[in-house]
Image 1: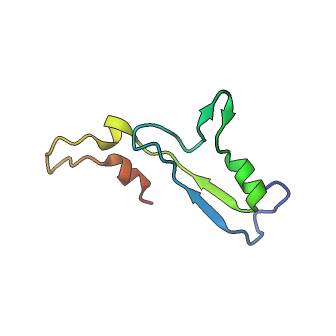
Image 2 (image 1 turned 180 degrees about the horizontal axis):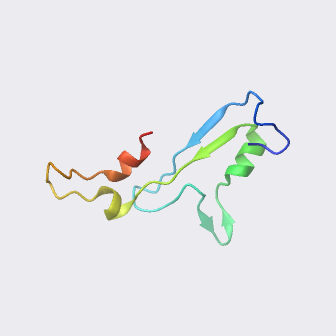
Length: 82
């Protein structure tokens, strides 16, 4: 929620799903030389929006598949479904 706004204010909601080629990343922002490349609080303040981010499994834990129909893999995509 932007600084100085109340939760009851009718603000648009921005859902941010991070990229990273399904290999790396996180919903809290990418940290480069101690600076976040994107910061949800700053986006909320500048854009006057409510920012929603979340994490999902990446790499082998999220997208490895054995070919078994009982365990099809792609758990990272399942994490993104509400």
